[in-house]
Length: 453
Image 1: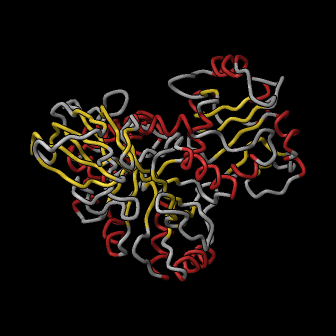
Image 2: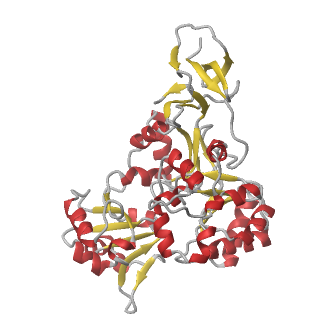
Image 3: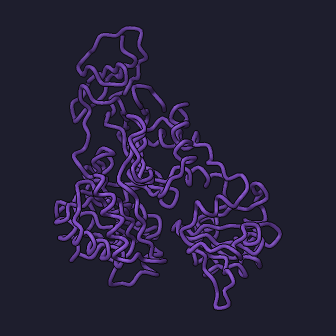
């Protein structure tokens, strides 16, 4: 007996079809399929497509953001508004946690400036890039940063911490009360509402607690999506058929670009085990370093560039020659495009979040949100890839625009083959499906044969 029957749907422009699902798989597709006692979902003449895959997301950071103070536009635009937001926060375990900060609010924040905004409690604020945390004096004292030697701690000319700490999420978390990974139940529901049935968690250097938290949420059904991990440690094996190990995340941080020999050693060590790499590159310099090193040590299938925020036209051919996939986020154009126009060198504007040039050059392209740092909705990202409009209505990089089918396809490739052929609704395929209205809104989501939304 089937578990689920989806009726009256359109599949690849063919109307009036039914889909029978058994044991998590599509077992029959046809017109007027027989009914038993199974659950029936009436698609009401809407399209059914494979579930979407967000190819770069940060699950725990997204969950933690829900209990944090928004510290940047559009929620907060001035230092006075930021001070009010921090003051009104109830905090957690005695701390105030802020996210989404951008310099347009109050400049380059440090401990002294943050003390003037809020001194009563320890405060940590994350820059909207996700790369930087800023702590006030109370936060510095509570975490022992004054005596610590983490390489991400920024210090002034006298050796005193400025309160700015780069690329140190896990290190900071271990020094703050209540540091257990947050519940992922709300995240799982939100993803399902958007038609997302699979994700690639791009958090680097996941520890055992982080992996266990994701695994437990999947086991209980709080997180029904399939999950692919970029941050699983070297030598990790597949955890299950739904929780899998992906390429190894390497961060080429602009706050401290890597030594070429060390980067070559890290890449070669993972390649030797047959594991591709996923390299975080958001600047021209980081991309050129990566391409130079891969040109020396070689690439393997599955190597990928994360973000590709700025790709010079002259680098596209080398990316293609190396067989790299670009996992990018054109949603940032709609989210931050006006800031790019103000702060990015005009010569680089046309290189931001390329899509069409890469696709036309046969470079595999996959889309993602980078949530919580970018807009989560894949439908917003798909729209941004088509119109390339900033919040102020300016078209940014219009020659990089692509059509709806191309943009949707960038969400339909599998976790293990981002940018590869889009998955199709067919017999034998996993029953991870979305019913999409004519207005491109998800109206029902099925994951592993169960209706989740």
